[in-house]
Structures are given as C-alpha cells and as structure tokens.
Amino acid sequence: MTVVSRFDVAHLHPARRRQAWAEAQHEYFYAVDLSAGPDFARGWVQSVDIAGIRLARYHSDPVYVRRTAPLIARKPEDFYFLPVLLDEGLSFRQRGRHADLAPGRFAFVSSLEAYDYDQPRTATFHSLRLPGSAMRERTPNINDWTAHDFGDQVMVRLFLDFANSFCSHGISIDPAIGHRITGHMLDLLALVIAGADRNCDETAVRLAHRQRALQVIDTRFRDPDFGAGDVVRALKLSERYLQKIFADHGETLSGAIRSRRILEARRLLDTRDLTRASISSIAYAVGFSEPAYFSRVFRAATGISPLEYTRRG
Image 1 (cartoon, helix red, strand yellow):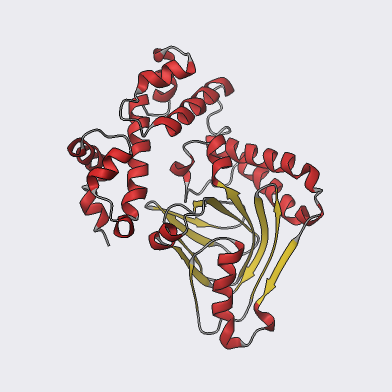
Image 2 (cartoon, helix red, strand yellow):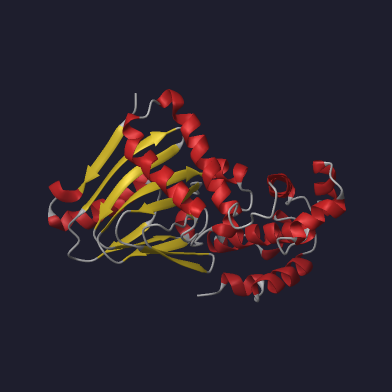
C-alpha cells in the first residue's frame, strides 16, 4: 500500500507558519536552515516514497534555504535533491557553481556538501529526493555535476517529462513495480549527466568503460598505493586505450584519482571546525601519504592551501 504524507501551513496561526514550514523541510527532505519573510503565508507539500525515492509536490511563498556544514556534521544524510520546476524559478549554489533555473531546465545538489538555494517568488515544483548510493552507482563522478544547469536539450526534456509524470502518478503506482520504474528514471538521469546527446561521437562501450573506471576510483581512492595501473588491471583493459578514453574528456587516469581525493578532502575540510581533524589526518584519510604533497596538490587544484580553505569566509 502506498502511503501519502501531506502538510499545509494554512491551518496554523500566521505567527507559527514560518517555523512550522522550516520544520517540515527536515521531515520531508533533510535538515536545512530556512529563511522566509514576515509575510510568509502559503506552504504545502505532499510526498510519497517509491523504492527509496521520495517524490513530492511542493508549493510555498518565497524562501531561502541553506544546507550548512554543521547540519551535515550532525546528521550526514546522503541524498541528491532535484526539483522539477512547474512555474517560477530558483537558484542553486554548490561547490562554487551557480545555476539559475526555470521550467524546462534542471539541476541537483548533494546533501553531503554545503549548498544553498534561493526561491525569490511563490513557486510550485515537483521534487525528487534521490538516494546517494544509487546515484553514485550509476554516475561515480556525479558530484562534478552538482549545481550544473543542464539546459534545454533533447535528453533533458525526456528526463523532465518522465520525472513529472512519475511525480504526478506516484500515488497510484503499484509498489510491486515501483523499483523497476525508479530504476528506469535513474538510468535516464545518468544518461543526461553522461551527456549522451552532447557526446554522440562517443560509443556506449567507451562511456561504460569510463564509468567503470570511475567506480573503481571511487571505491579505492583512499588507498595511498592506489594508482592508474590498478584501474587498468581492475578493468582488464590496455592502459593506452583507457587513457585515450579519459583524454577525450580532457583528463588522465592519475588526474581523475587526484580529483576524487581533492573532492573528498574539501568535504572533510568543510566540517573541520566540528570534527577538529588535523590537516595531516585529512591528507592521510583521502589517500595522500605525505601531508606536504597533499597541500601542494590541493593548492594547485583550488588556488589556496588546505588551511586557507578552512578559513575562507
């Protein structure tokens, strides 16, 4: 039996509505800080869970939402949040990227990294709360695409049509087949992220090899002895062939491993004020055997040292 959950601030006293709406975000999505104006009056949400994905229809007056490092440290819930806009737009910011969205376009953010979004006008949208493990299984480099505006393209339109229909009919979907439908939707989203329609000269086989390589990297990058040769051996492909696949994306295998280590280091540095972890311990945790080398690689990737990164405003 499909269980539908609903919440509406309309029945509450006006003085209570803003706080109640902020609390509802914790229940229906995950912990965030939400700000709204003193005249906030309208907010309702209806959700249903289908095979690990939470589908919701959401309507509210203007709000500003932040997912902060302290909230993540206290409760590191692992999801990707993807709104499907029905009328007004909103702006996403994560990892230094900024996406201004309107109906017909989409972006998503990770709940394991700090982000914010601004909804400047009263808006209605469908939303997908997607499990992090299922997304990374299909797209190991998915965090390279958070807060990215995927624009108006054929694959984007196909995905949005599917997602909108899925959200609209979620209440009546038989739970027995829900896992198959969610699988198809996640696969379609993975195709959009992979840029299947933007990289039509790249075969599905080469894309699959690259995704498998990224999965190996995502699993083993914390091992300081792990290198490009280990990826080649795990996939049983020639190094020249695999390096050519990555070169076509402006990368090298070694560079992909470094990028994954730096990405994880940035996540750990974002919560350093709460965990009290040292720079050295973070370097070792992400696969660097020498903290000094970690600092050099981090500066080359970000333009600042790890310590400067933790002190940024």
